Length: 257
Image (cartoon, rainbow, N blue to C red; front, side, top):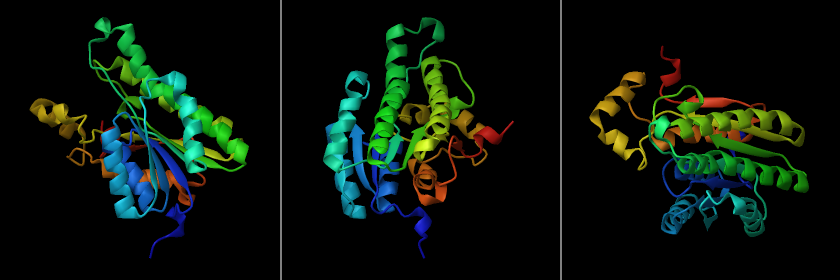
């Protein structure tokens, strides 16, 4: 018997980075619990395929919005268009992200700013737009930010990514404290190493993959679907008293000395 604690019927979720990987898995998971979903990603073809898949398997409605979230000057206008198309957004999932791997001493300001814009600045802008929308309609809301193991610790060559994800964690905690009075719960998920198209080169590197497994007590790469349960928890009534937290879905990585 399904629990009403996790029922999202009547809710609309906006998911960024929803064309594939973690974002698509979370969008499918929320739709599977009854939510309609608005999907943002850069690639229109991926979004169209995601829309067909979600509507076919869940019977829920999906809207698509091809957009490069690095274009931070137009993010809040995009949110307004999404509210107009969907009638309102109850759940915001900030999943879009990018990285550049390079020695920090050689990192360019251009690449650093690009990572910060996509991973942190647009998250702030979408959260701001979401908060104003929920205040306007006088209803509570949920924000789920996708963090990283880099919220917990660093490794070489990903300075911009680590700074952006640590910023996401700080932003999550600040907004949870500031916006509790509006009934907006703000939490984050910290994925471990997840097998996606974007991490395919790392998976193919035998030495790197062995290192990942050696640091992961459950001894495997994660799957995008592994994050769905936590996202549903944060989005649903089951998470009513959870805010300002990060939940690491990492196979035990952060528990290992």
